[in-house]
Length: 107
Image (tube, rainbow, N blue to C red):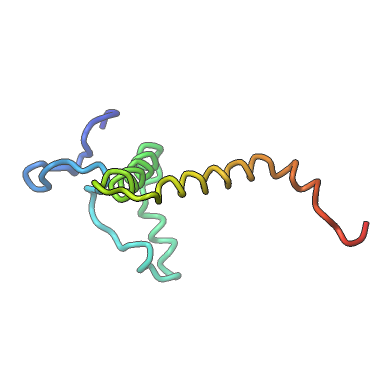
């Protein structure tokens, strides 16, 4: 599979128009339904190649797009999500500077 091609399991006669937010591979047990003793087997069945990981992030991005940005009456939620993500990111990159300003009861 080359970069930019359709997934190998996608069949337009069966699936209809291509949706980038949908996984066209063989369905497996959802993560929320996996028992603790089956967790190792479940992770073993995952495809851990860089292209598969990129595909996972791509599908998550398109699901977010379809839910929050592309509806006709999109609300203010994506803006708050962006602001919250920015605050967490900047806190994380400035943590080493911020931890020096902690207030301790005893020195």
